[in-house]
Length: 234
Image 1: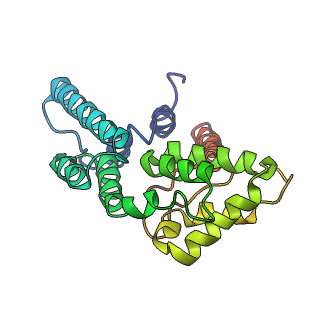
Image 2: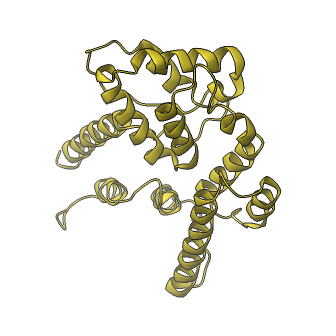
């Protein structure tokens, strides 16, 4: 980044260096500053920002700990601990808490899938991982699964399980509908090409899911930077 770069280019450059999954608030603050709007960061300078960052880190650690015991801890205990997390100042964490609270009520259904006639253990374990991961990490896991699926000997078994979800467990199916539909569309021996996920049909988590989105986001920002540079050098 050169010293002569305009404010618009500097703004884009700084945003590209931030991770939306963990630094969403900083991106919002940069956007607000660029538009001349009040930022979300409270007054008090660097010290207040450090305290806020430490608070977010602590909440993230507590949330990750609950993810680690989600499938084994008592449901009432999970609900109590999740409701105790004060994440109202952190939108990305609040969405994760809301999703986990919703999933608490579905745990019995998910756990009950094991042992059913059309259940596939590998897909079930992947579903449970996806449900617990933040949106971007979940998108990567889904893409990796789809990438290897056409060459998996259990492809027909996996598809049978998805059809079972549609028929008997529609609530689970709706959580990751786009992903399940892509599983059904997989063809043996045909390599999957990563595409963006829009999230679940009824509980969309974030538009930034999947490797496909990351690729197109990079292309978009590169084009945007090129246009800004062109305008600033006229």
